[in-house]
Length: 212
Image (cartoon, rainbow, N blue to C red; front, side, top):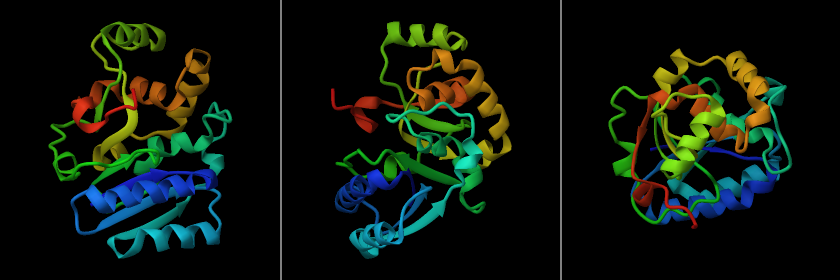
């Protein structure tokens, strides 16, 4: 089972906690965790792999931050939030599907049902945490068509071959710079704008339960 994480140095401990919950409850015998980062030192890398143990093979992929020059960022939303959007071109080409998880998640049930779900021709399988009113507000705010859901990017199955065929970093950058004045949650706003019509929606109460 392929798992994707995107972190900076400050989130290494959270990643260890998340991996612990996956090993305990995720249901698979082995996991390949692909970890996109730009500042992990050797000590942190060794500690993550040690705590992951034999059940997880960690693949650390150093990302050149220059790729995301011009993307809006802040202390709360560092450049690492965009790594998941560019993952199809950052990950090894032999991968065909991967499950992205935010590192502040706790996995409490097996992951196989979600991991093996049919994409039905979509780029992503994901959830929305917004009700009808907020969905309409986000459609107007972002200028997307009626019916496009607002996606929570914390849990996403990614159809890598399809995403690679439609991946253009410059287009994402151009959209980000053009619309940054309207952004509230930059990565979720961008994904909704770029790929909102190619997302298979699943039940948030089952697959991406929020703390609320």
